[in-house]
Length: 112
Length: 114
Image 1 (cartoon, helix red, strand yellow):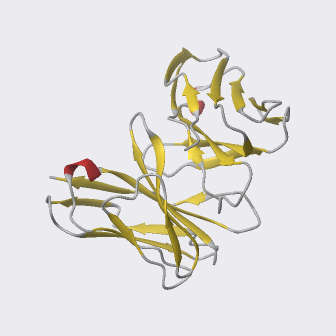
Image 2: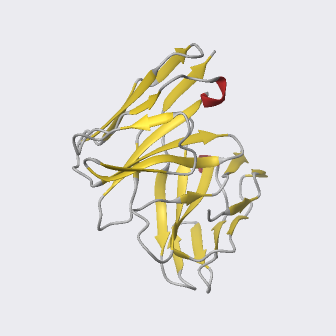
């Protein structure tokens, strides 16, 4: 049972570079989410997807792009990384019928 | 944007003590969830409460959903060092289609000393 996996787990990049964080789930869950976690802010929703080719903005979408061409993959791209995007990023998924959300292990991103 | 205010932000106690974490909002939620997160890992669901006034117990943990579905509490009895971690509340907005989006509280970092 592979579940939900994120890659890379750790990444250091320079300001202005493009970075893509990958998320893959093996359950065929309809809904997928990207959150960022920062001390004092809890988890904030960046983007979500209700199904393949259906995505929408969350609370903090600026500077991020997502796509979902296949149900199982939901990559998050930082088009031009900034230091304020240094954070821990969590991908998550759930079915349409149950309200249990499953989180990946997180991707630690540092922008220098 | 619906906000969830979680308190306290930090809690440091001795083994055997009791504690309560609060999660409050001015908005109504269709459900409220509590998660526990350990360092280097993603949050893991502990419980979901959906009915106003609902109380759920998970061993030494007691979860309550407010009657108006605007607030919730987590009470731990006789805390143990293994309870140490980050506790997060998260609510699913009531009404309309939320697509499973959750609003998270800021989290409570609990440290239980032996």
